[in-house]
Image 1 (cartoon, rainbow, N blue to C red):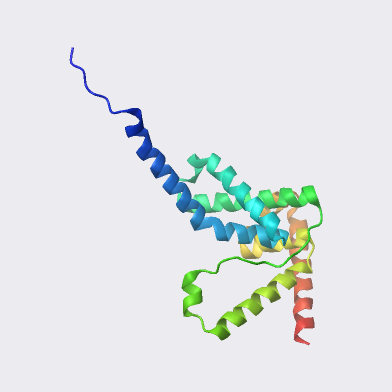
Image 2 (image 1 turned 120 degrees about the vertical axis):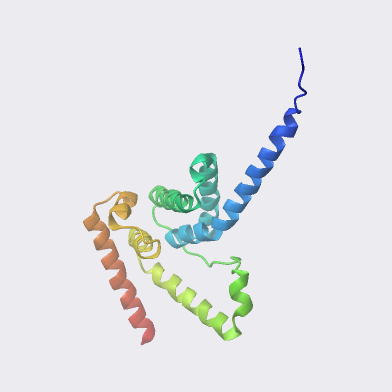
Amino acid sequence: MVTVPMPAMSETVEPILEDTAEWQNRFVSDNLRRIFLLIYRMLGNVADAQDLTQEVFIKALQRQDQLRDAEKAAHWLSRIATNTAIDHLRRHGRVSFCEIEGIPEPAANSSHESPEQILLRAERQAFLKNGLQVLTSRERAALLLRDVEGLPAEEVARYLKCSKATVRSHIANARVKFRRYMMRRKS
């Protein structure tokens, strides 16, 4: 009988674990800012958005087998984030707003922008944030999912657990309120 030396279990498992950990780290770093901003825009609260972002990645990485296709994974991750934020809004009702601090800007943008461009971008972000505050949480969620995330009205209706007509109403109301906000700011 011939015996073939078998590699130690650690020699076969460690490279797989290292590849998995490296892939997970890359997946999180590639999507972290986008998911945080999606949740923050829905909740308007940095602390809650940070907690829920972490929860979203935990949920996603537990179902890692569904994340191998990058395009599908990004969409699936957005769905998890949206559902998690909506569940949070349902559980906690009204949300409070606070200043958004400490979010790193992409290095590519900040290195090529002049101080004036940075200031203008910050003013536009503040204008948008203040405009979103005038909306109800359901209007804000519907508007962000439809106009920012580009989801069809049917899918937004499923997320919000309401009819497509209600979604269109939320979006229309949000746009009217935002337009009024913009008109008041211009005056």
